[in-house]
Image (tube, rainbow, N blue to C red; front, side):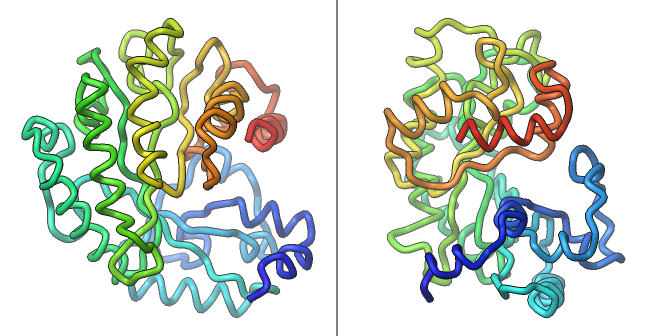
Length: 289
């Protein structure tokens, strides 16, 4: 397939649609998935729905097939949907939570666990996992510590590399591998007061030496996607932060993959007072990289 020819045949609206991720309830009404935030406010018509690029939240291969068939029947360009999922510590087989894995200091076992998760999810139809979460946290009040690898940047970096390599292997086109998305870029685990989605106030020294190394390790391991975080860095939300997304991620680290915003993080740009409305937030997010 000539990718450039396909891209040139898309309208601007269709290209924007490919950047949009929807829950499965937009395609199958009897799938009960809560819809909130900016997606719920879009008032998407049928045409817009069938221009979307990906779906989050289906763990049933039969439903994936149903959604894909329905989408391809209505889609003008027949570009298949990408199915993504949050696979934190197991898909069918359940493994210890990431924090417990880190306590073992055994990165090889983490690699093997990621390989199993990749195989189980991929044969079910999932192509992308929103994992690993490598946010360093040293505040026990924060509610998502269990999803990461603890407080030490070196240990977290080692697990970050192992998990990414376990998910992706040498070739993500293989039936037993999935694309990995490292999250949440950056410093999501250090919100003021341990309050989720809050501001982050850290020095440049801490940013570079404590919080960024785990993400860099994932980049070096070949991770395919990077998810932006809800929080601010120097008063600018990460999702619209050009210093993070362009200067560090694209220029210094030379990341060539996909960046994706976390669910509702664009709407949080409005909540942080950096954009007047969702339209401006989306504009700033796209231009930030």
